[in-house]
Length: 83
Image (cartoon, rainbow, N blue to C red; front, side):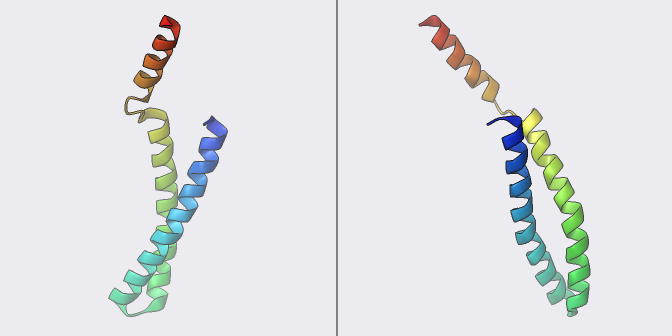
């Protein structure tokens, strides 16, 4: 996956996850406060802040959180060169 595709994928994942998360926050806030307007206000604020946090979290994992992926690629390249 190239960098452009990964950015598009991260943006799509961010958007869909935020819909799920914001609906949850709205409903819980409404339930706790008893006021749908309070639920909406909290949900809207949370939508903005958590969208940004999630996107940058995904980008950091893509850039720094390789979790051994480079080692596996190096092993495949070394095996191919040995052949």
